[in-house]
Image 1 (tube, protein in one colour):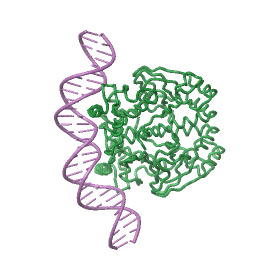
Image 2 (tube, chains in turn yellow, orange, blue, cyan):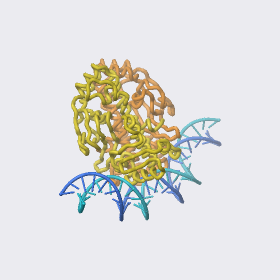
Image 3 (cartoon, protein in one colour):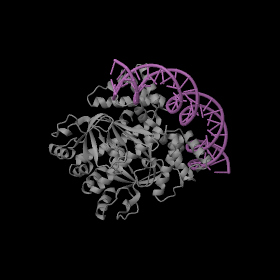
Image 4 (cartoon, rainbow over the protein chains, first blue to last red):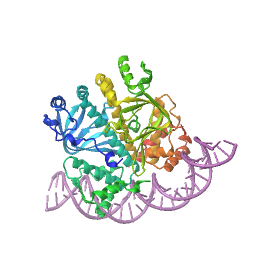
Length: 250
Length: 250
DNA sequence: TATCAAATTTGATTCAGGTCAACTAAGATA
DNA sequence: TATCTTAGTTGACCTGAATCAAATTTGATA
């Protein structure tokens, strides 16, 4: 299985420009294949919006879970942290993605969600979502797919953390971002990172110095151009090779 | 958040000895808080059983997804494998747990599920499960919790892979198994591993030699006794310290 | 029981990435 | 603009885990 698939995020973008009557829903991940009436019903549930400033918390570990969050715009990270101060970034999240799935289990958020740039989310009261999904089977099914996709994504990260070298991890990470930007209509080869080297390192199981060195190495090889947070991918093919090459067979 | 919680598997065991009329369902993870009638309805869906011999496949990567599997007895691993032959064990699964959640997303299994000992599963046609969950909200809600718990578990593994040292990983792993055996009424301090050192290593992101050395080290310190696959935990407290000690603060 | 293949342990050595430190660059604030 | 803080880069060195190799144990099968 290609790692790019494994690392895929939870967004099915095919709908983003689909015709939904409710403005606030147009760009969300849920209203796939719903008719006008169903979108209306969903819209009544999803109406409440919330802005989070850069650096602000969307939710904190331990907070009571009541709503899922659909990202309308912006960029967030989720991270779990141990008593001893260790922190593990579990994901970076962008427009159209759904946050809070981990909290359904115990009705308590198990991670922090922090905005890496000014962001806007829609709140989706989960009890209501379950309720209306009883009458809209396609919505329920789609929700199950989203949860499942998060599991698949996590397994991909486990593969990355469990068996890839530093440079391979960074290549995977960049290709994953690239693809997600492309899906949203942005350039796949020229973009700005929203997170620090340390946050990338935490996500990839590396120290920030190692991340920095891996960037430099890819730049030396002319595969990418790095200017602080601005990244250009010059040779997508060779970047893909970096990710999946035979040096990982071990 | 304590790692033991993060590593928790998807089973809520509280029901295992609850009174269900349908024999085949009694020990499954789904019929939590259902009344007799609801269990009956669910039972009609779950009826089909299947045995898998040790070493046999429950399902393979790429196979079309139609049913979830509830483990009635036995022990399985799930693993994803790359074209280049690399393999990552994504989980070990025992009685009462639900397999196949990753496949909902693309309606294709994204991993292999292989029995590590003779096992028996119930097949749960997913379309039917979705169907009846419309009429049994508590079933739907419980299913969502199970999926969410898998996500939380995966995040715990990401933390482990991303920030723990070899010995800490093994300690976490043993404590996780210990707790799961305890929940099923077995000894928490004396059990047999079903998997090889290599499979443990794959799951923990380590080479088999490193796993072996970590076992030996814990034995030298009299924290556990290792006799090939037979493990005795002599000092649960010190094993917990191994997992969570301050050496991981870095 | 004998034989063989697979699993495990242990030692010696290597190396990727971590650690520590110094320096530079980029933003934020006065 | 000057100053300060935070982020990023790079070098030197160290260490934990990988690698390679050998011996041993275990389990399966003839």
